[in-house]
Length: 166
Image 1 (cartoon, rainbow, N blue to C red):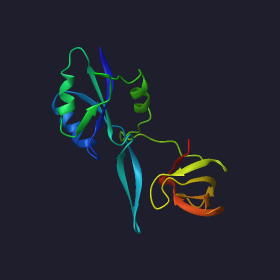
Image 2: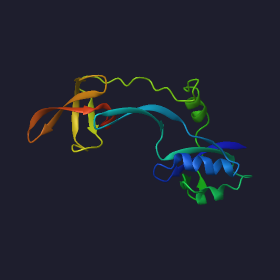
Image 3: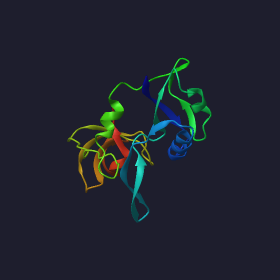
Image 4: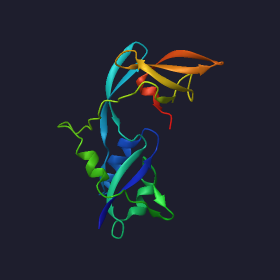
């Protein structure tokens, strides 16, 4: 019986892993979404993996040569429990696929933040600092209250570098 499994890919090698797995006859799913990327004074839109570093693979554990997946270029290893791959719960991959638009890209709901919500900065000079959400500065930036050097400091950060503190 075919089930979905997950493989961890090498860094930024999701597409390479997908191509090589499909050449071997495996059915894969690499959900992507449209992400705005900022660098210096330039902005552009790129297609990014929904789960960076991971790819879904569908196969029959009893019939497919699944051990070959770990030796595939672009793949680091199958996510396993013990010596057998761990399957994805039924319906999860299908649920993700229902969120795709006509271009095959997953449409993410807009992120909603609430005043006082605890957030963690995940990258940059203030990485791992905890703060409280105060407001949106503009469409792509948030204002956080950070406790730095014993006092509250307002800091603006790009929305993509903050995550829930939990």
